[in-house]
Length: 323
Ligand code: DGY
Image (cartoon, rainbow, N blue to C red):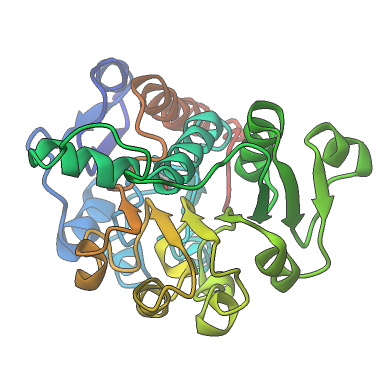
């Protein structure tokens, strides 16, 4: 029997591409160049499955491909706000994602950003590399203590809880959270988490606010100018979720006017573009969407896409189906 044909939109880690090529007739992307919307649409016409990433916009237009051959869209990533699930369902395309395997890597990166911005690590490194360091002195580049402070989590799902664990058990932080689907009291207590009735309460009480909501229409500009104004002037905002959860222009204003102390960002509203004003600011740490970027995690994500696809083409229910 011939193997199903699959199109992979970006380069994947080598061990995953090796397994992929054994399982399927795989069209790899050796140059690692992003596909255009037209090329994505054409992929749905010539392959049995398309494996996109967070950067590929799988919208209704792409999914309107005629003739349509693909029956599976296996996303390399947990977030799926870049895929029009309704359009996929309407066209009979199954969609899968990769939950769980990137929780620890992303929580580690949220803590990295939090520590970097509090301790002015990016600024310090730039200072040293520029040859500006004149030596130790008591008032040089003083930052903000992290240990014992209050962390506020907006969203308390898998990644939010993993951040709470690190912050509470590693840094003796008080953890506040708001989530429309809060965990039971035992789970919250295990993570030192205290539920807040509203996002506003989290913003007003926290020294560090970290965002862990899904992307999509329901959370677009969840953190807007009004909500930024609720934060303490000494507080920091961390985002490893989706860029459009924050109104980036309002954030740049808050940072410029110092109505908040700083921010640590891994995601942006119009990736890979970043609001130019942010690039010139020292009170913001900017990373290029590295949340899940460890070798272990990226291999595990790829293997999960393949587990889902293997199940699908064997006529079984894919373990991580989202549509
Ligand atoms: C995801 O999986 O949704 C991330 O943003 C990419 O790591």
